[in-house]
Length: 260
Image (cartoon, rainbow, N blue to C red; front, side, top):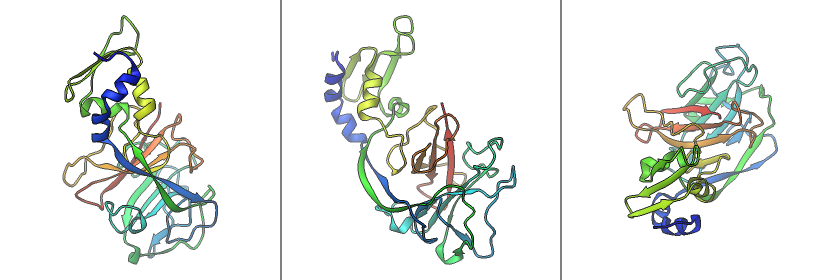
């Protein structure tokens, strides 16, 4: 029976290796973005004849929070079109933006470059940060994913409130005892909370993958946007936003966020 966090980490290495994914940090430049490139708050592409998207709640122009040229990414898993996320940052009384597929205060979409033209004015409030490249990193599932991936927890509330005293990895035949194991595992293995392409989502209130409305398939992380990382905005109380995509229908994307 393993009894120290350090021993636990060594014993769990096969499980960690099995679930490790590659994610990419954006390498950003503070400049005026071209409308065809990838950027946070850059001048976006718009559909031909389209006006700048506005919030359905307050009527203000939404921020072009993210635009990604999918064909220029370091992986081809997301397609070859343009991903866009517009989000209302003008009025903190607007509601509904946290929920995937909400169209009140956000617009998350895939568009084809041939159907677009550059916006003629920049209605963003935030400074442009062009994404000039990507840096690969190893990413592991956050604690919200652990149980469904084979780590079973038993909370002894009378002994140490809100801390797991025991958990198991049946796949490896391992049994751990100790109040701080989950915190240690999260600190040394868990998913980062910063902006990233792909990898594992850093969940705030538990795993919240939306289902594709076309086929019901669980959608997967395309891009994570953390509060006050490359976009100077807080999603609630230091929340984290997630752009997800259906693996079967690449044109189906959604944006949602949660906070503590």
